[in-house]
Length: 288
Image (tube, rainbow, N blue to C red; front, side, top):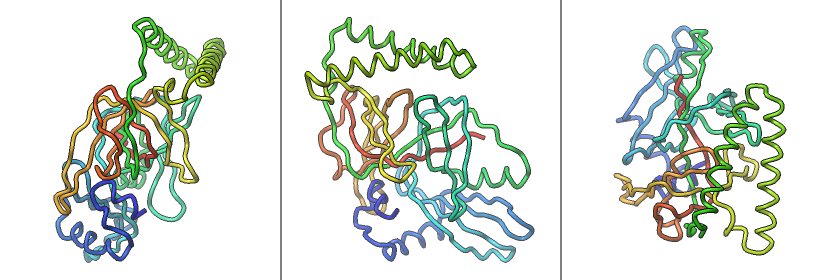
């Protein structure tokens, strides 16, 4: 995972050995420290250290009664800014360590993300309080991306697209509530939209007809290849390396999330209304 650290301004990191000095920085002066009891005398500890506005490194390990810390794993984090409301959200533990995936169950695509606030969830489990989550916040890291121009549509085409989007959302909500007629209408509408898009793509380039898309990428279940519409963007400086990180707020399918990418890995100039295309590693903060 160390190659993802370049997304938050650590492009010179090439091996795990080079991470040791960063781990010491986090251990010596964390921005946030969260502990969660897992047994008598033993707790899971989560140490977060920011190296810029909303970007940083998380260490997960155990701390005993004598305050000795054993680090188990780490990951780069990117702070999300938008709340996502979900009808069905579940959490699954990784086999190898104390890390978890959040899974948003949808009719068309189950969206999976790497849980950021691990210690919060572990603490609730230890208290035997089954967490009920209705909202989460999503962010992503990208190692490579490019900026695409917006699709050129007239007013009538744009209005029709918005009407179909609202209709699709209403049918989806009704289908989730058990309305089988709404489910059939939703599937027919989705099929018609895909057929229309396919026919347009035959005449033109696929990137000229697709506003947003989100498809699983490779074997990593939190990785996606996306195209999203840029809602906002800002530049963040890594306080340790001085490298610039571009934070891009995207609307992708029915989700809003922030993508963080090193400026040296971004091709093109971001602007509101343009599109971002790239591969992302999705993570999120669950509001328990």
